[in-house]
Length: 121
View 1 (cartoon, one colour):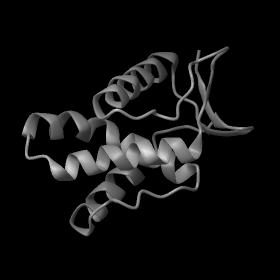
View 2 (cartoon, rainbow, N blue to C red; view 1 turned 60 degrees about the vertical axis):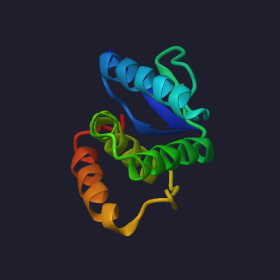
View 3 (cartoon, rainbow, N blue to C red; view 1 turned 90 degrees about the vertical axis):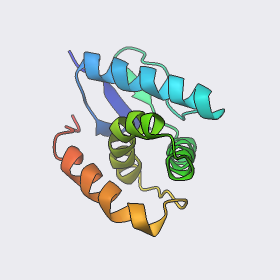
View 4 (tube, rainbow, N blue to C red; view 1 turned 45 degrees about the vertical axis):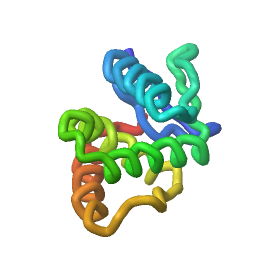
């Protein structure tokens, strides 16, 4: 079984149910941590609707959090989520304007590598 993350009728990611549940659970926890909505809906009938503007703003806020903290544990926890989220932001055609230049290349490389392992459906 798998789950479709989509924007309207455009399927942007089709992970296994376990990966979808983990990603969504992490997004919910991180959204609570930073006090903003994730832009991800609940999984209903194997589909998760993405609000592309809200999701991009959420990921941008996570990047800002990463860049502004010197807490190495928080950075490590965010480092697992952000590249996957960035690949989805890219697939929705949005941007993350808060990314500082010293991080941009590294995040882009990680997101690109992961994107090849993220089937669309």
